[in-house]
Length: 253
Image 1 (tube, rainbow, N blue to C red):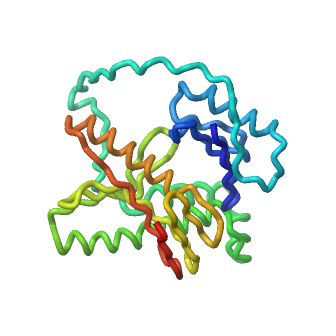
Image 2: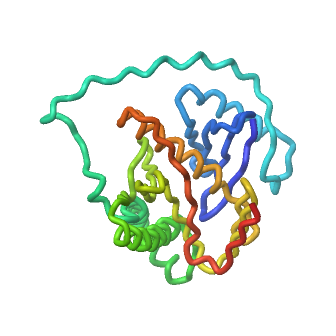
Image 3: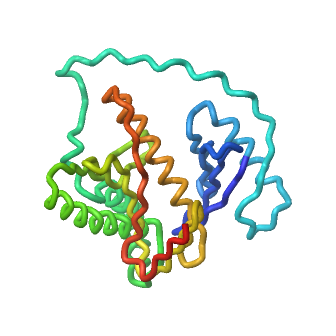
């Protein structure tokens, strides 16, 4: 397994992938909490983290390869279609009513309420905090939504949803666009004044590597599975990463 350390905006995480490139999950080093991709991968994720912590890699090393004894996973059981709930009892939400950046602003508000004084001081001195990361992230999502609205105005065959909650840990898809060109998950990344460089799977922001390409592919696959299950059709989804307010964007490959 491959363990990649990612440190930004006060976060410190280990992202773990299997030899075939599939995601195993990630571990929050700040809170020491594991987030396996699926429950049955929890042991593999834990083994990779233990191996990483016990390695002789220097602190600045970003990626180390960890070999851990892992039992073969049993074949997945066929998914069963759940019985539909009575209409009166079904809890649902109209996703079309969600505003761009709604989830990010909710996260920022919760952090602000938890530490109002620290948040105020950080703003005054321009300190980059997790609250700020969520707040500017919401701004980026709103700017991308404005551009998508222009697309819909030109061609009403397009439909766009924003801040779609997925999973049970507060994750969301920034934007989902469905139209004549296909189905796209769109991830806004606010990097004002930054220099962006992309080459294949490598995505650099001011020279620092970030897992945007991998995460975008995972997000698209997840959306494709959900849409296919609901529609009964084979829905292919393309992941898109959108740098917002970057000074320079170079795409080599």
